[in-house]
Length: 147
Image (cartoon, rainbow, N blue to C red; front, top):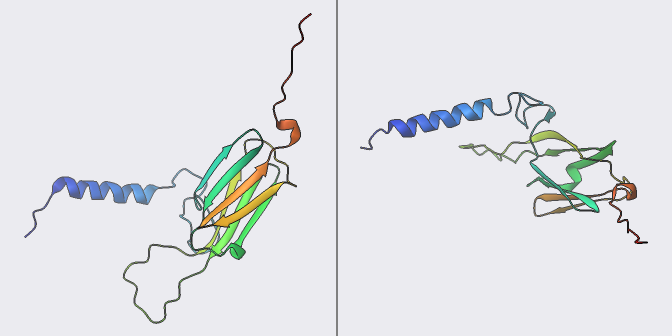
């Protein structure tokens, strides 16, 4: 017989409470993949930049690239799509943690971008988006003359 561990039980309770309240105070109180379109923290994204471009990596495993939609409007990128449900084939589920359904994520970009120079590539479950900065946004080197 296995002994009962109070600290382990308390840790499990803390994790369950954290999970229940995850997302409270953000844009949406509901997790992604509930019925209808949800806006929240899915898909998870990384956003970084260099002097020429912004780079976004979005985690979208198991989603067909044809089911993804990208829109850019006034410095805001919207990524939406749908993850199709797995076929059940009369099987009984014992665990169903991967959600399915429609999703939408809006990402505010730090500055404006050149909408004519946007590239998106889907590779190994990651959507890689490159957004070019406009020429006016790039830093310009100014040389100083000596008299």
